[in-house]
Length: 122
Image 1 (spheres, rainbow, N blue to C red):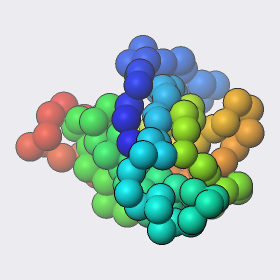
Image 2 (cartoon, rainbow, N blue to C red):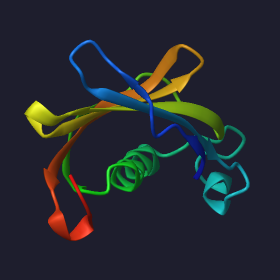
Image 3 (cartoon, rainbow, N blue to C red):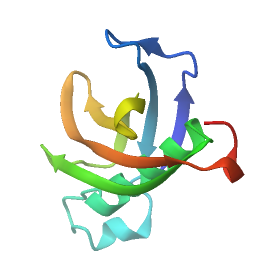
């Protein structure tokens, strides 16, 4: 997984939460796709969730991900480039995550977070 771009300024939604968007590329050259699945490669769900966790902790350095809540995979995710959007919900100690192909929601869910002073400013 490569993070091609992140837009730190993002945009602010109606409730005042800042949305951060960017693009990830899941490379089809990785050997895991030889087995998952031969002839029809799919990005494993655990890899998508780990990408979301790592991305959230990199983009929001004062927060640490504690868990995952209601992650749904709407469509098979093939290797390639996908847009992502993170919307922190500070009143709920959560970050809403969406993986997109154009306007199509491929996966979405919520990361549960807590302030982590050792990692930076929350």
